[in-house]
Image 1 (spheres, rainbow, N blue to C red):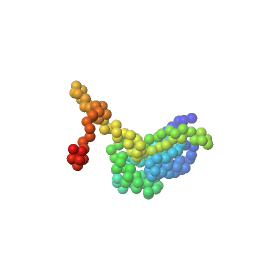
Image 2: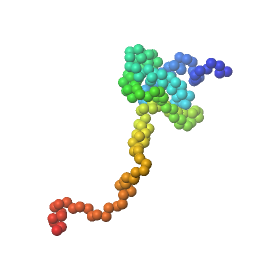
Image 3: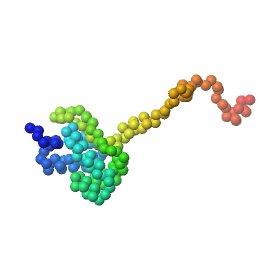
Length: 166
């Protein structure tokens, strides 16, 4: 039965599960993207989102609270120095889970979990869309270089060649 089962136990005892999630969270913070099973990725998302929210407030108390979960000094310093300033204005949703298909050996559903603000490909694709120019209705459209009629004038000669040609 499923009574009061509020999270996925992942088929492990509580100590093993906590250690595994702490290691996965540290790896995600250090590498910005990891590949794992879909169930573990979803469990990790629930584990790490509150830690990322705590990292926005850089106090001794929040650092100690996060260290109690992660248990790695390098991951905590990376979180507070690099990641926290980048996610400061984001109101949540710091991670993204992308489904990858099935694992060859046991056909387990695989997924990639990544930090949203550190995916360079997605950030590069989003920036050109933001540069759309607005148009006003009722005005004549401006001609661009591609739509303008081709020029039939001959190219200008430099002053030295012009005197030689005459």
